[in-house]
Amino acid sequence: MDSPYTPQKAHKFTFGLWTLGNPGRDPFGEPTRKGYSPVEMVEALADTGAYGVNFHDNDLVPFGSSAQEQDRIVSEFKQALQRTGIAVPMATTNLFSQPVFKDGAFTSNDPGVRAFAYQKVLRSMDLGKEFGAETYVFWGGREGAEVDASKEADVAVSRMRDAINFFVEYSEDQGYGYKFALEAKPNEPRGDIYLPTTGAMLGFIATLDKPHLVGVNPEVAHEQISGLNFYHAVAQAFDAGKLFHIDLNGQKPGRFDQDLRFGQEDAKNAFFLVRLLEGKGYNGPRHFDAHALRTSDHADVLAFAKGCMRSYLILKEKAAQFDADPEVREIFAQIHAGDAGLESYLTGFTKDKATALKSRAFDPAALAAKPLPYERLDQRVFDILMGVA
Ligand code: GCO
Ligand code: MN
Ligand code: MN
Image (cartoon, rainbow, N blue to C red; front, top):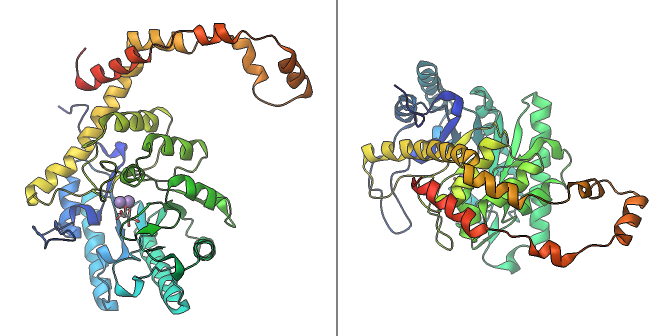
């Protein structure tokens, strides 16, 4: 029978067409395999229990296709989705592969390039809706610079704002009802990409015309490239009500964008991430934006996809085990103890509360003396993760 590690549609696992479709190319080497075609991928994923696939416009319809070619591809793909019950919850635009976007799309200095980018997004939003996509992702891969004299960074941000505001209104005008999710990355393929972190995106969203329709799509690798704590970034987005989507993968800090299998690196950070997503009621897709190693053949690519989901479900089980663990609960009781009567002073300013706090006698030495056995606690995390009871 099904084990707790068997993916079910209710887990909402999704993959980009570009993930299993990746042919193992890298900046130094030619493809090492034939990537899964969109239809092959949908068929392969359906057998694994995955919920959906996402795509950039050109993952499905190659750049420059004629209207007839597009119709044929769309209809074949729709049939595959119908056969398999695979959903398309998210869509996005490729604004990075073609030479026209070599210096950015929305942040290009050339209004012609920007207008062409707008056209591509508008058409791609139409395409996503044909498949019922609910979330529209923007990842500004080329929206950056190596030469800061080439573009003014504040102007770049204001052009990004103009673009996002425009597409939000288009979605409203068409009755598409998209929710938009902005994906940050610090670098690669540009030397420096504007709005480099999830935190920067959250600040930017507050400056938009309709911020309630726009959230973030944080990616594990993108925060970890900068050495940041991904779990913290996602927690902040969740707290702000802005976690509209998530890109899961694996990454070592300070490296190129590795897009490794989820859980492949930093299992502890992945554990706290899954515990957050599962424990706090995130109900969006669990999207894997990763690809198999360059050494993988066609069969191993499927093992990679299954591995992403399996690792997630193992971490989900570990999170439940951690929260129910008697030793963890005992330590939690100890470290969360304190004068609960003070809590009411700490939220909701009143003059009386401020006056009372100013005159109250505290005993900082006693506060400092409370034991915080974090060594024991973190060892427990390690033991549970390693399967040592
Ligand atoms: C990357 C990005 C992309 C985006 C994708 C969806 O580093 O290549 O993560 O894979 O997620 O373009 O917008
Ligand atoms: Mn990435
Ligand atoms: Mn991504």
